[in-house]
Image 1 (tube, rainbow, N blue to C red):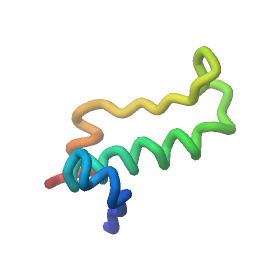
Image 2: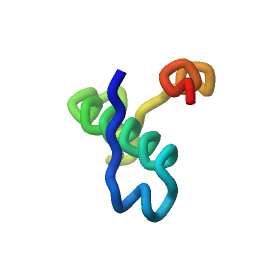
Image 3: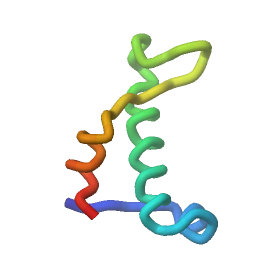
Image 4: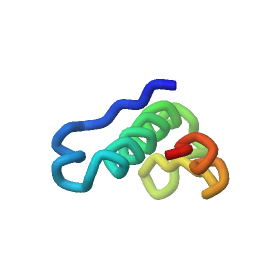
Length: 58
C-alpha cells in the first residue's frame, strides 16, 4: 500500500499525522458528491478507530 502526505503538514504536525490528514482529505473530497456525507454545508467522513488501525498499521 502507498501513502502520501503534504510536506508542510508533516513539518507542522509530523509525518504520521500528515498521512492521516491526507487520508481524511481524500475521503472528504471523494464524499463531496454524496449528500449523506454533508452536514451544515460541510463534507464529513467516518471511520472507527478499528478501521483506521487496520488501514494504518504503523
